[in-house]
Every structure is written in structure tokens, then in C-alpha cells.
Image (cartoon, rainbow, N blue to C red; front, side):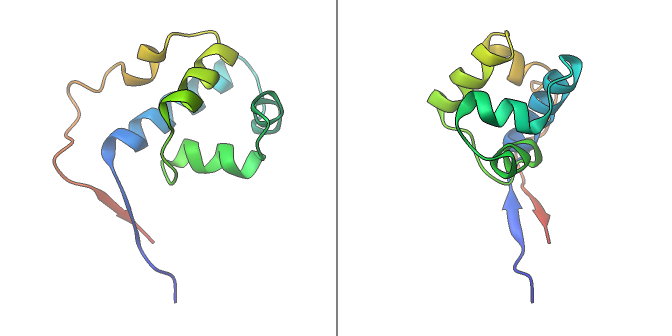
Length: 88
């Protein structure tokens, strides 16, 4: 049986922005992971919002992807952050 995991909408939004920027730069998950010294599976988890990004990791990712940290939060103002989505 698979336990459900609660994903906060902010984590989901940041992950989607991470994926968008990475793809815009034509960088693979593996390449990004190598720059960060982590596994590509960890990048996948960040992009899906399954794992939260710490401030220091978000700063590193922003540096590698050549954007400001604020990039990951653009468009969030209109998003609802009251509830959390549940993923199986």
C-alpha cells in the first residue's frame, strides 16, 4: 500500500518553475544534479514538489540556472496556498 503525501502548493509552484527554467536552458535533470552534487532523483523530487527546497539549495539552483531566487515565486501571488494537494 502506498502512503499519500501532502504537497504544499508553494512547493509545487517552485518545483514547476524549476522545471520550466531547466528546460528553457536545455539542461537535463542529470546535468543540473551534477552541478549541485546531488542525484537526478533528488532533482525530480524537487520538481514534483515532493521534497522542499531549503533556502541554501534554492540559492544554489538559482545560481546554476542564472536567475534570481524570486524567479521561483513569480506568479505565486494568485495561487491559493490555503490547502495542500495530496498525491498517492
